[in-house]
Length: 58
Image 1: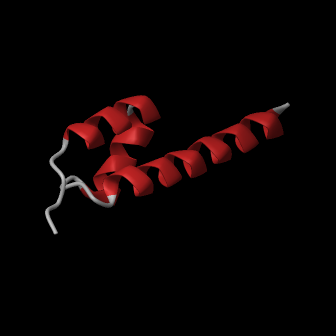
Image 2 (image 1 turned 135 degrees about the horizontal axis):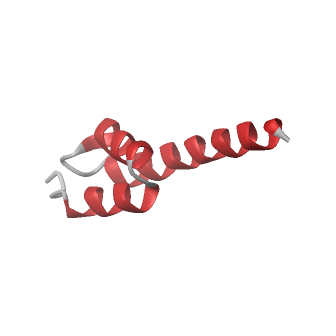
């Protein structure tokens, strides 16, 4: 029973990192802060914070 929660937590963290890396890499907030907000609050809030951050101009 406890292994189920450990696996779900690991999947949650991995998915959060993948989404944060995809969205945050071209934003001013960056990858690290996007991951931080996604883990602390929720992935949905982290995505919203990252999307409201301005894009990095090339």
